Image (tube, rainbow, N blue to C red; front, top):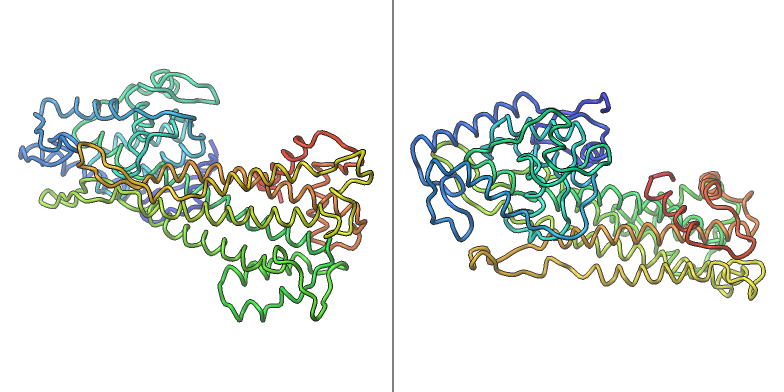
Amino acid sequence: MNEKNFELTGENLTIDELYEIMKQNFEIKLSGSAQDKINRSAQIVQAILADKKSIYGITTGFGYLQKVNISLNDTKKLQENLIISHSAGVGPELSHDIVRGMMALKINKFARGHSGIRLAVVDYLLKLLNNNIIPSVPSKGSLGASGDLAPLAHLSLVLLGKGHAYHNGKKMTGEDALKRVNLKPLELIAKEGLALLNGTQAMTSVAASSIKNAYYLVKIANIATALSMEIHAGNLDSLHPLIHQARPHSGQIEAARMILGYLEGSKCTQKLIGRQDAYSIRCAPAVHGAVHDTIDHAKRVTEIEMNASTDNPLLFSVDQVYSGGNFHGEPIAFILDFLGIALTELGNISERRIERLLNPTLSNLPAFLTSNTGLNSGLMIAQYTAVALTSENRQLSTPASIDTTSVSANQEDHVSMGMNAANKLIKIIDNLQYIVGIELLCAGQAIDLADIKDKLSPQCKEVFRTIRSHVSYMDQDRELAPDIEQCASLIKEFKL
């Protein structure tokens, strides 16, 4: 485990910090104040039990079964039954990064002190996280309304010595995973099963990871645009700061500044009064900037959610135990859908720049960027892949959050479908990394064919060298899939 420590307070966790936790770069602990708040909330539960009060989720059933009172003798069994019965997820497993994010977010929620869970349970979760015990969590099955019930149930199974988990890349039973770190299965008491299951931590973990990747994708799209401007001898007038200050969207101003910065020192680009480049180049700051502003909005919403109490009921004192709807995932569902729409557009404009690189009437280069067209097809089919992926993304970007249904005998009669939005966004980002990777592949080939390596700006020259260190010039047809994977890996691994 990395020696760096990070303290969770429940108040100020950022996306950048959570991403480091996802990547195992921090060892996590609770602040002293967080421990005090957790202990106080657990004492509230004990006081309620001592007074034999009927409080939802503590001494009653759940959902439609809220009117069923549970005897004190059965409260422990109730918590175990809740986790076991809600472990109904299906489909591919969520990535280990996302599950680590879920665990950290769950701990951060408990740190706020409104969940009624013992410090011993939170410390147990911390030990699993810090020892890289990763529960196996199916990606499908959450409606995102009482929180991400099914994913969080699968996560929580491991605490009971059930389900499955990974340790050092090896999948094993939950019981065996606990043995790896000298832990015995937990016995939960009143409220704790519900506290573990309520919350939006699955969709929020996906949102945080997606935002980190989305910012980087905008950066790479700006770089790709600069490369296209080098290749097409683009007109720098469209990047003049006065244009973008006249329409003061912060993302647009920043995109223009970045693209212009990448082109500083170029001997290819020009300043030509009256010449207008195609929209996929000239309007890139407007489009990329709008995507950037969307990500900024998503970041604000997500960081609020990361430091929120998304439990039900919430405990403030013995006499202030309130049931509400903080577990409803609508805020995150909306921004997951919005991100999907914005990133789909980033892919659309990238594919149009690919067309301009491959089309000889637009590039003044050999068709499909090969020196012996006819015998060789060059990068023709790489564009087909990009087009297929942009089409898939347009289908995936149909909002999930406009859908709803009614469950639990009509008690839970409106849901967010936030996890469906999250699963779609994961696919959209994966596709987009390939689309922009294909644009980089084509740009590298075009720079070689145009013989402008020595005329590039210093920053574009460095990008070109990085591309060439992973993918060589193609002088005759070869299998393109490995080249596409290499260029996509530059983006996936943050190497540019």
